[in-house]
Amino acid sequence: MVYTPRSARRGALFAGSVAVLGLLTACGTGQTVHSSSPMTSSGTAAPATGDSSAPAPSDTATTSSPASSAPTGAPSTAPTRATATSGGGTTAAASTRCHTSELRASVGRNDPGAGQENFPVVLTNTSGRTCTVRGFPGAAFVNASGGQLGPNPGRESGSSTTVTLKPGQSAWAGLTFSNPGVSGAKTTKPAALLITPPDERDHLKVTWTGGEVPVSGNSSAVFLTVFSPGTAP
Image 1 (cartoon, rainbow, N blue to C red):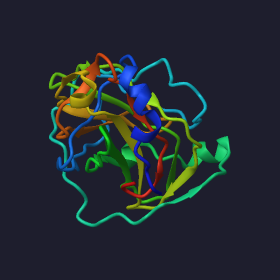
Image 2: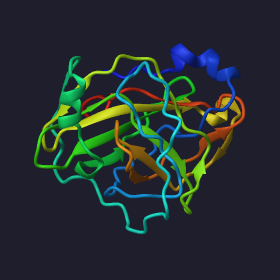
Image 3: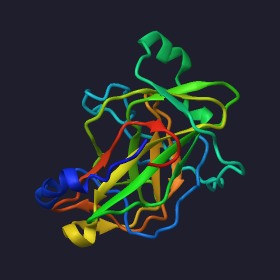
């Protein structure tokens, strides 16, 4: 699936919007393929729901203390492509949903365009069974102490599809924001990005190497898209 940069659709809105969160930056930054097993942290990453038309949940998956284990590296073999279907009832989703403990998270290379920064957030099925993801991830930038930086991201409009992941397959969701150098938003450099799989509360922690992200001020909004099959737009 091709991920269309949001600059063409939201350029004017970003230029005058008020902060909704902070997240990623810069052309040519290396991809962060670090990840970890399910963990808790003093930051928050709202659990995502599978319904793309529903507002973001008001409750957040808060934690006790930041994890101390170092993130693991990327898989030694490239994951195969997953498939997506538009169907999937509540019962089926509950029985086949991928749980946090069955997934590995990573953030792909930035694909900037016209003042817009675009990163794929990738979940890979590391379990021995086939499972599904549907809808939006939860996400939050945190500092080295685990404190959240900026508000939770907003959600792009879009239709959710059920993405079926066989063992080793991946799904990605877009993470996008206006380049702080263009928007003039206040920025900070996160230590990590917390990612919560759809309909889960435990999150995965990915070391952030994408540079400064907007956290407040004009055009500081960060947005997420629904999951699609594969590892990149």
